[in-house]
Length: 588
View 1 (cartoon, rainbow, N blue to C red):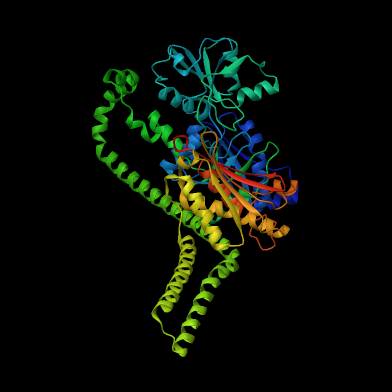
View 2 (spheres, one colour):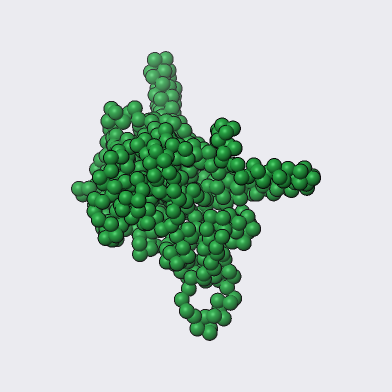
């Protein structure tokens, strides 16, 4: 195990040193499996930003390998952790870590779809598929390397190749992973596992020749610029430990979300879902699922022959210490129970805050449409009043024929039903809460959101159509959150046309199939966006509306990306096309 402590700051004078001595130290453990110098360079921008935004604290980089990071978390010697998705998922389960934000890299599709494995071979190799690796020599960085072994190992297992028994030789060579690419190029191994985009970066920097290597079994992932042999996984999270002060964790999360893009294009986004990592652990039978591996007795003895020999020697001693072990197990179980309870409490609090924020946004939408709702209700109420006065005049005049009065009563009932339906639609949207992800058809969700907006905002003219194929597409989604995104886009489009003076122009809403998923698009004629507005669209609290909060697009982007989708806006004609893409159920 190795450890480094680095306060990432410039050289200070005497007065700065005195000020730094008064700052409260905050230790951030960083997985530095490529070396402390690399970690220092990679994360210097983030630590410098935190030092400037929270000047009363001194953020200290603690560079650790996998065993050292696990030990630091268990000993509570650090306050925060920056690590890869696989290592975080293990620590979340074992020690109650809570992710605050997820890295948003320019190389990834989104924070939830950012990293993967590329199994590389020489360009002239006869290998074509992952199944061709049986009996071959394969290089990887480490058994604990998430991108440089575990992700590819899952794809091999799903293809029917057990990396621990079906390969001719599985060799772990450590870091840097560039050495794996060079070894495969030089014919020292049949294949190697590297992180996605590494080969493209090495070719661009001139480290290897173009066309010297190729990726085995490349997947076609729409919008992803690099070749990959695997599906994509979430990027690195910034996580808080169970003992970390919640107030400090909240301030750090806000500071990171406000951080501008670094020189290499990185920034932080709302926490991504890491369920796909749990699926990986289950398929590989590692981490919390290690006990699920099925092995024959002979294979078990062969794998653990040294340990079993030691166990046989120590068996008598273990019996003597049985009582002590039982005590330690009981104490540890109690500690784990307390940590799990704290984790659940923090998770519940986060879900509650998210729900309150989404509810507040829905209220803001309804508030913006209040005058339109009042206009919609005014018409049936005025009709009811007129019919009532007509009945009164007939009675006063002695004209009480049954048929005219029955006709008027039916009209009063129809107008009352119309007003009640409008009120019920608004009440239903206001009281709905999100948080339930299920398999559902996307077209009815979008159609209902369009109808709700049209009922609440009669001046809006909406043209809605869906491809016949799109009507059948099903997605894994939270229905209320997706409808909230559609309403946000419709409200923004209507406001843009109103600000330009053409609120009556039609808004076009479409649903089409696209690249193993569906795209929902809202087009307006509000004049488009300039370059400065387009660059800051998704920043929290940035708005072009005099009374806007600047949260609508930021929240919508987080919702879409948490569903594995992509939200974007671009100028089209004399307006803006705002659209989001969601993967079909089997691709979610």
